[in-house]
Length: 462
Length: 133
Image 1 (cartoon, rainbow over the protein chains, first blue to last red):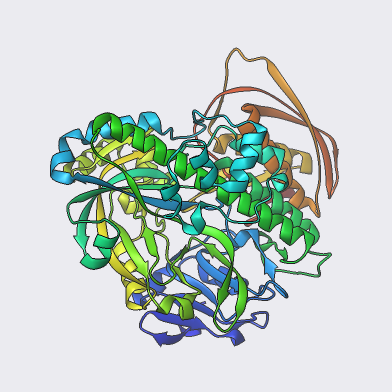
Image 2 (image 1 turned 120 degrees about the vertical axis):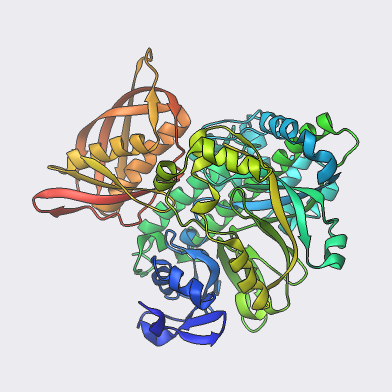
C-alpha cells in the first residue's frame, strides 16, 4: 500500500477507489495533508479502513480522520455509516472504551488571578476525583442504582444530586442514549464498573485546567462563554471497566454468531452482526447502556471538580460548555441515505453549529471547534478526536525522565498532579502527533471551524 | 515462554509453548505481567475453576484470558498456576491458583483478537497477543 493507490480529491482528501480490493463495497477516504498521509501509511490504519469498507450495508465511504492510527478492527479515527435494514453493527467500530469522550467546563476565573492557586486547585481536584489504576470512587452502586444509571445516564446522575437540569442541555444527546437496556449488561461488566463512577482511570485520561490562549471566532466564543485569558477545564474519560467488559462480551457473542449470519471478514476484531439480528440489537442496547454510564461518570467528575473549586474559590461557578462522545454508534438521519447507524471510533460528532472538543495530549494545546455545514455531506457529521500516539509507552518510559519532564512542564507554567511517575512520562507531549496540523485539515476541509485554542496550566492524572 | 515486543499504544507479547497447555498457561502469566500484578505476601491461596467454549483455538485462548482478566479486576487476584482438566480445539476446563493482589501497576482494558493466531510453528505452539491498555 502506498500513495499511488490513492486518488487525490483535493489537498486534504485522498481516496482508495472501490476497485482497489474486490471485497470493498465503498471507497475508503482519508482526510489528511500529503505530509500526514505519508506518516499515516507507516502503520496499518489504511488497511483497517479498507476492511471497514467491506462491511455489509456500509454507505458512501469508509472515512478516516487526520488523526487516524491503527486500532483494533476499525482504525482509531474511523467513521462508517451503515444501513440498519441491510447492514451490520460492529463493536470494533466503537472500541473497547465505549463513549470515551470529552467534557469542557468553563469558569469565571481569569488566568492572572488564578495562577497562585493552581497547585492547591489541582491537589483539591485530585482528592475529589480519583484517578489511576484500580482506583475506585466514593460511590459504590447497588444493582438498582446501577440499572438506573445505565438506563438514564447523566440524567440519573443529576437526579442523584450531581449537578442540575441545565447541565443536561449541554451534553450530546442530553447525556443519555434512548433504548439502553441494563439487563443486557453482564454481571462481570457491572462488577467491573460498580465502584468506578466518578473516576478517571489511567492511560491517556485526565482532568486538565486550561488557559484560553487564542480566540478565533469571538462571536461564537462569546455565545459559549469563552474569553481570551479565561480558565476552562477538560475531562477526558469514558465508561471505565464496565464499557470495556460490554465490548469484550459482545465481541465474543458476535464471533460465535457470524458463521450463522454468513458473514466472513478479514479481521476478527471487526466481528459484527446484522443490526436487526438478535445479537446486533442486544449489543446496540448494551452499548447504549455503557455510553450512559460514561455520561454519568463525567457528570460525577464534574460534581467533584465543582466541590474542589468551591472549596478554593467560593464565589466562582462552573458551567458545562459541552460534552462529546468519541467512541459510539448512533442512529441518525442523513440526507441521501436516510436512517443510518453511524459508527464513530476516535471520531467526534460535528453537526453544524455543535461544539466539537478536541483535546491535545498532556502539555500541548487543545481546541474548541464548532461543526460546519460541510460535515454532513462529507463525513456524516463527524470530525477528528485528538492527536494520536506516535511513541510507544515503553519507549517513552525509557527515553523520558520524570524529573526532566516535570521541570519542563513547570517551565511552561504547567502544574502536574500525577498519581504515578510512569503515568506522567508515558503521556509526554513528544509521544503524540502535532494537534495543530490535525485541526488545520478539519478546518480547511469545511468539517468544523476553529473557535478557540487552549493551553494547559494544570494536569491531573493517574 | 513469553516475550514483550514494541507497540505504539498498547502491549504486544509473543507467547509460545511445547504444548497447547503450556502456551495457554504462559499466556495467563503474560497477562499478569502486563498488569504489573503484585501478589499480597501474607494472602491465603485462591482457587478458581473456569470452563470456556469458543469457535476455534485462537478464540478459545482470547476468551479464556478475557475471563481471567475479569477475575483480576473484580476479585483482585493474581493467578500463578494453571492446571487444565480438559483442553480441546474449542473447549477448556481449568483450575487456576493464585493469591490476592496487593497492587496492579497497569490497567489492561481488554484482551484483543488483534494478531492472535494460535498455530504450530517449528514444533512449538505460538501466538501473538495484544492487550488493550
